[in-house]
Amino acid sequence: MQKTSSAKQWFEDSFPIDLNVLKEISSEPIPNHLKRWWFAIGGTPLYLFVIQAITGIILTFYYVPHPAEAFESVARITTEVRFGWFIRSVHKWSAHLMVLTLILHMMRVFFTGSYRRPREFNWIVGVGLLMATLGFGFTGYSLIYEQVSYWAAVVGTNVAAATPFIGETLASFIRGGPEVSDNTLTRFFVLHIGVLPTVVVLLLVMHVVQIRLHGVTKMRFSEKDHQPEVEFSVRVSAPVTPIREPGASSGSTGQSEEEQAKEESFPFYPDHLYTEIMVGLTLTFILTILALIFPAVMGEPANPLVTPEHIKPEWFFFATFRWLKLTSFTVGVVGTLVFMGILLLWPFIDRVLLKKFPGKEISFWIGVVGFFVFLIFTVWEALV
Amino acid sequence: MSNHDDNDTVDRRSFFRKALMSLGLAASYGTGGFYALQFLLPKKNPAKFRKMLVASLDELSGSGGKVFKDLQGREMILVSTTDGFKAISTTCTHLGCKAYWEPDNNRFFCPCHDGVFDVNGNVTSGPPPRPLDRYDVEVDENDNVFVKLREA
Image 1 (cartoon, chains in turn cyan, orange):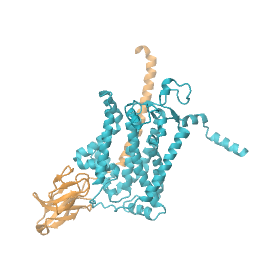
Image 2 (cartoon, rainbow over the protein chains, first blue to last red):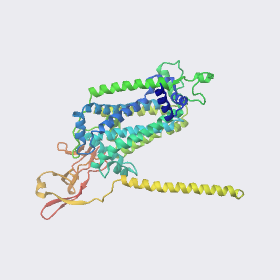
Image 3 (spheres, each protein chain N blue to C red):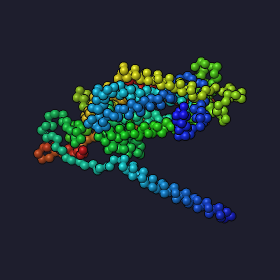
Image 4 (tube, chains in turn orange, yellow):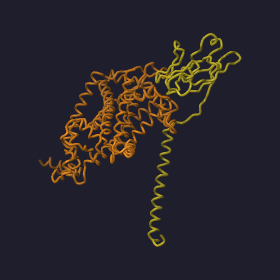
């Protein structure tokens, strides 16, 4: 007994945490609509990122970042290392799911207008996270050093080289020379395991702190309307309000009528955390099944002298790939960069649109068209 | 302004102190950042060219052309164009993939983004912005064909 209390005392001395503050921090009020899991999809890329970090660190124990040995080392991981095939497959599928869930999360944020004032900054951070994730995907599959790895690196860095003004310098930085060479793999490796993880962690902290500061976007629809179509139309046109009204952090008593009309909320801990844990467990299950049924395999080793007759990037670059085929060089590359710029600055473009066309949800329709163009290009590229 | 001389002096002093501090920080970390950037950007070596013997005129007289490798080991094709002999690089001018010769269609085809070039290397369809790179060819008195190529 004495021992326990002294251990407890030691802990309390070492970590002088005010339990009330901890409770306050962990009781972030979550709007009721987040009880539906599809509104809670923003947590999934984070969960998958953790899986990527763990499996990635494990894979690095065996991977050799040199053009002469990279392919062989991945083959060794896949065929010789105990459970290597499984770790590599989970890493691969987790990457695919991460991009997929990011797109879903971004669509949810877009179509609920959650990027609007005062959350513009967090949208920008989010787009930064998306681009970092795509950077992970791009550098990641180049590390395997199979044919698609090599030629994707050639095409990708040439797209970067066509960026106005800074293109050549940027491409030379990524490649480590005037063209894709031995240095390029080293640089991709450093970007993949050092630079991008650091960037993503920093952006994630900003993202979460912003959510915590502004509160989760509250939907201004009545809890009585349970039909999805009603929710959707209201959600689309409703202006968003932050859930955290000044001084309304916890108590449910003494609410004004106006406050009661707004959406009810529940504390982050434990309810929402349980939702996230369940989502995480489901993801682990899905990843295991995918890794078992569709394990990662080896392609042809990279050959800088021959571009294969049929070559395609990963699915999340299909739309860009198709776009580059359809348009001239300048339109293709500049169009891609302009699209990224629009995505990044969308909250401000949206505000201009709202001012010019008050009451008309132009942004919603731009989003719908944009999404379908992305979908059509992706499917088109997948089918040919 | 002149009525508040005391305040003004203090303000000016603190302003200069802050300005100097900021300038010093910017100069030192700026220099560090500049060197770090130089460290990360690869050195640019001036391109060196070398003449390489690739064929003799006899070899070229009958056939359509000759395939050879440049100093980086990449495929090039020596062909007779309307401007005389030219060495054509098969690196696609769109985004750097390897185009290959399709004898049946009498064209170069790049599989990455469907770029198509004719026998002279001119773009006939697809996104490439310019013809395939062509290198000058020299023929000496002994009918040896040389191409000036970039060193590896």
